[in-house]
Image 1 (spheres, one colour):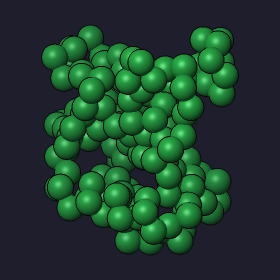
Image 2 (cartoon, one colour):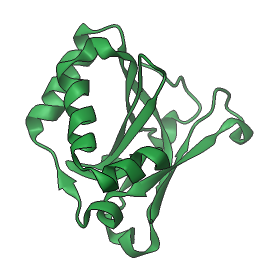
Image 3 (cartoon, rainbow, N blue to C red):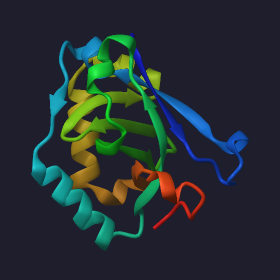
Length: 153
């Protein structure tokens, strides 16, 4: 399975504190990328405003697509949902604009390959059952001049 690599800013300004996550390419497991409706983004904005466990964070430093997908990568439109459920299970979704291009972690991506309903179930639960999540972060790219400033809004 192909991977998108995402570099996040660490807890300190030193590059050594940065960390990377590898998102499994959605097309390589489902045969195509998946678009999302604008209502999904609107609902996420609403949840960030209303719920204490939903956060907007500016923390993406770089996105490296799989070799065959270089034409799809654009840091300016990249965004990620990272979440942790009440059982401490992590889930991550990488988007380029309104298109889901990556899933994390690998174990979850492998399970989605076997049963696509697992993808719809988790994404749906983020929007309709916010109480089942310890934390949901919507992560945006760092603008170049902001790289040394604070990480969380």
